[in-house]
Image (cartoon, helix red, strand yellow):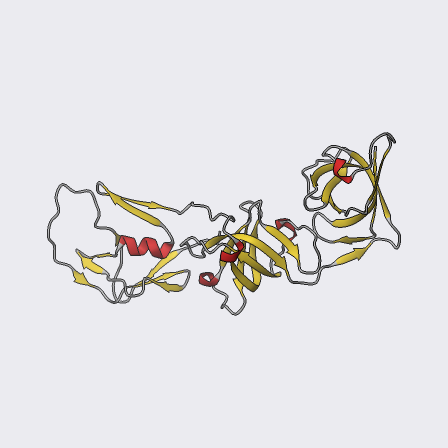
Amino acid sequence: MLSKKLTITLIGTSFLLCTSLIAAPALKHVKAMLNPTVQYTLDGNTILKGTQTLNYNNKNYVSVAELANALGLEVSYKDNVVSFVTPTTPVTPETPASESITIAKATIKEISLETKQVTILPEGKTDEVNNYIVLNIGDDTHIKHYLNKAIYKINDLKTGMTISTTHSPAMTRSIPPQTAAFTITILEEESTTEITSEAITLDKMVVAEVNHKENYFTVTPQGADAKDINVQTIIRYDQKTKLSFDDSSKKSNINSLKVGSLVTLRVSPAMTLSIPPQTFVLEIQVH
């Protein structure tokens, strides 16, 4: 999440933000003056336009509700206690596709692998935080490239990339707002590298992940950390891929591949430069 700093610009007066909702034994009437010279900015952008600021006893008072709304916070008042809460209600990707919002073109401004968030700036918008959108990446978010059907992960995205996205219409009131991403499509040309002119053999690799629904599995070298993306390779296949077992009595079925299987692969010489790289398998030998 981009850092936020609330600054208050004063014109001809000192300013102290506070609230009159303070626990007190009794309410009393006071005389206060409206101070129209006070301005509010968030990261250099004007907020709280039209908000009434009261001056009383050399202090300035502003509506707690309006301030919370400008900062994207939830506020409640009970028993003389004002409570601010950062909205945590997740924006789920279960909204039907017909109700999703499509952004045809946007630029990635920031990526957080730790929080699984991608901050984007839609095309045509000025480069300021008020125009950013934070996409929350979940297990159901489908990341792809417009040229192929390969499966991508958040690690394959880069700052500055041009993408399109569909996301939930439900968004937080924070600045910038957050929403759940349904799909992210990479719009840039994909970089590939030709390793050799012939098929490559990956000898005795361990299957670390299997996704038969999306027709791919992930392998790592024998003895390597299966969770280390730097040593993983994503292997794509189709129903025409040849598969055989050392044990000839077993039926050759691609769906019999399981996590932990030891395999030798003959793969395409073309491999993406993503991390982990992706390639297409020609033959699979299960040991």
